[in-house]
Each structure stands twice: as C-alpha cells, then as structure tokens.
Length: 310
Image (cartoon, rainbow, N blue to C red; front, side):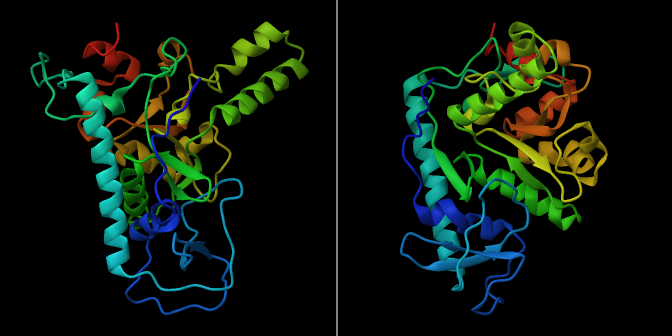
C-alpha cells in the first residue's frame, strides 16, 4: 500500500510551535530558560533556533528531544505557523476538490430526510476498514506535532484544541498513538498474531483474532493520520478501563465539539469488526460528528446512509 504525503511541512511547523499555541504555555510571560526541567523539552526550528515547550499531553516512543539551550517563542512566530498550516490544508483541499468535483455528500436533516451537506469534509469521512482498505491513490499530507506524533495536516489544530479544552477542565489527555506507517502497522499486527499463536491458536485463527484488536495493515485509520489513541497519566494501557477514567468520560462528552467520534463503540462490534475501544477516536468533522452521535451510528452506518459507500 502506497502512502503519499504530498509534501512535508517545514520543521518549524512540524516540531513544536503549533503545539505551543494550544498547550498551556504563556509565551509572552515565560522568561528565557537556560536549563532543562523534568516537564519541559527543547525543540529546534528550521532556522536552527531552539524553542522550549511543555511535555504535557504527549506520549510515544522517542518523542522528546533534549538540549541545554532554549529561546522564547513570540506571538508572531506562532501566528505564522498557524497561517502556514491553514494554507497547506486549503491547498490540499482545493486540489482534491478539483479532481473529484463538487461536494455531493448528503446528511440526514431534522426530519430524517437526506439533504446536501453544508460542510466540505468528504476527505474526513473516508471509510477505512477490512472491506474498505486505503485506496492506492489516496493523498494526504502529514504534519508532525512533536517528535513521533504526526497526523494529517488538516487535523492538527483540532486535536490540539481538544487537548487544550480538556486541560482547562482538569483532564490531561495524552496522545498514545497517532499516525503509523504501514511498516509500523505491519509490526504491530504480526506481534499480535504471534501472541495468539503462543496461546495455542493456529495461524489462521490467530490472524482472525488479531484483526479484532489490531487493524490489518492497509486497513488502519492510523495509517492516514485521522485517528488517535488517547490515554491519561494514570491509565496508559489502552484497554476498556480507559472508559471509566476522567479522560474517557471527557472524550465521550466533548469529542464531537472538535470533530471526533468514538470509532469503535460498545455493542457495534458486529458492524465495525473491532472490539470496543474507548481510547480510539477518529476525526470526521464537527457537523458529521454531531450527526453520527445524534443518530447513534458508527462511521460504517453513517457513510452508507449518506451514500459514500454501498
């Protein structure tokens, strides 16, 4: 399966300043720091300057970079980064619209009748599962939030805005797993298959069981940068217990405000073919997220209802 980041966002956008914008980091009031602390890191922009930001909200392998020097980020830098990210997203959207034509997505109105959508989020509604693998010609652009934390460029400010809102409510959402390459997805899947084989299952049964918890390579939403697994400091195990944490409860109540849905809800396993995953949220756009939740649907059911899939 071919992944096609159209072009890489500059290191200035990719590594930290967007995150600084949404983290609880007052750049106008924070003095110059000359030493490292346990809860802060240093990132390097495209000009070789070092910018200090908070660690809060990120969890992943080899995420943090370290350095002994730091400089203060100013408001003009932050605004420039946000402008760059929005322009990149608009350019990608324009290219896709030119190729696919006018938006024809329809959603259910208040009376239940289908009507033309007032939003332009076709790209965010792509269905990816065992029956609908990632298309060979699917195009997207990756942006690095920090370290190994990457996503589709069009989702960055939404996931960070959600983290900021959660933090304001006293909930520290941690991104445990964002974008994954096909190679990473392959390794995770093979590891899960091997675990079941060690329990005594033959390969075919181990493969089927593994696919209920780890998406088969080429069928994972993580591979297109639209999905995130979340944790909280007290629970980073990615199991059903996350649903009972402050983070799990906050996401269930608030994620739709930022365009995210609980992708694999309880009781819908026969439709999604994936176990209940209260930690896995998928970006679909605000209006679609509200519609999906109002109707109690999965993305499979919603995309079928609006005619995106048969």
